[in-house]
Image 1 (cartoon, rainbow over the protein chains, first blue to last red):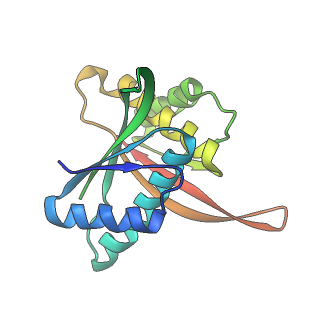
Image 2: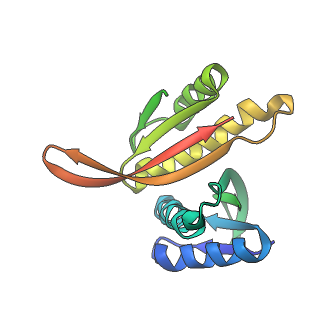
Image 3: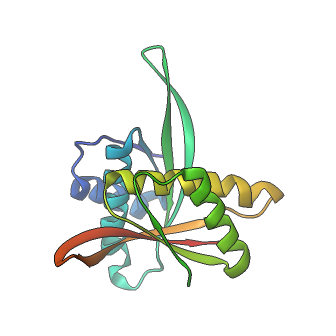
Length: 86
Length: 86
């Protein structure tokens, strides 16, 4: 499964395009975000991706958010993993 | 449909309980968040609610995020509306 990593500085429109592209190709994509800013950009990107995908009367895309534990430079961080499905 | 309003100061565990309760009763709930902090708390709450709901082997809950336009004290704000379904 393709994994997209979103940061607080990520452009929601660009991330939306990447999500829509991955959904077209594979039907599912995983998106990782650490921190409130990154989570917010991810949610905005998914909302924009919906507009792209559902334009043709396709059913709404489904999002399943969960926690993930990461080890970054020896530091434990909790991030959010979004599974996005067409 | 029940509407939950989440703020950046909301406790994700409390919101998770409210989401799980509404899902048990109605099968669907709407959650509103304005701002990165509130969106982040909402996503965390949904991730926690999944653990409560899916404990019994229930299928994953589905989340459909979208934009909403609000008028707060005469000021136009864009928020995020999450539809959460069992």
